[in-house]
Length: 157
Length: 157
Image (cartoon, rainbow over all chains, first blue to last red; front, side, top):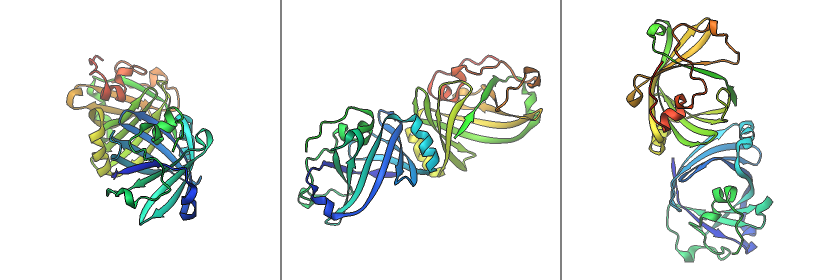
């Protein structure tokens, strides 16, 4: 089990692109979603897959359990997806020693770019990169579960 | 993924006890349960644990995905159980070549004994052992999810 402390930001400035260290093509979907808990399947680069259970409602801290599963079973599980299958490319971008995951969404969510900073520490605002847009930590509509299960958010950084 | 075809019977006659080949102490609980899908954690003999996703509403056939998980994480997951933690001892009993799982429930479900026959074939009634009581295949209240999440059934074989 890991504790997840996560800040989320919208991104419209493309300056982060020159800082990308790695990227991963992700397809993900939920096979269960109830108040306070989700069960997600994620396929990375069409090569590996994992099942993730998340519990808790607090925006910035959640209990998370993650298990690798066979790729072909992840693909079978897609038949049981609740809501949409999310497609995005996740870019690893480092700034002042912190790792940001910049997710560029595809499909019906095209145009949406969300940066996540996952850290056990509180990072002072002056340490954040300039290319981050509006902070949306705690805004449910930008959570992956909402993006899969809810309305398409209007994108405004 | 496996397909599960399962018949369930109540048991009051103790004649099966002389036929037991093996038994397993099981603790199990659900971490998600929605119409047509459940996510279950099972701890067997306090030694191993697995996560099982089941999909489908049909009483006798369901899609099932099963993954081993670390024992200590299964125990942590217990904090997120929906409903009760079921305790039962599962006995493997063979009769005419068919394997029956006879579950003797404990705790608040003490007194309940349910036999399951899992087979891809249709077994004619004359092949069934005499010690089986009333068939309860398809009766939701005797499903493990209902036993964990619902009312305690009145037990009448």
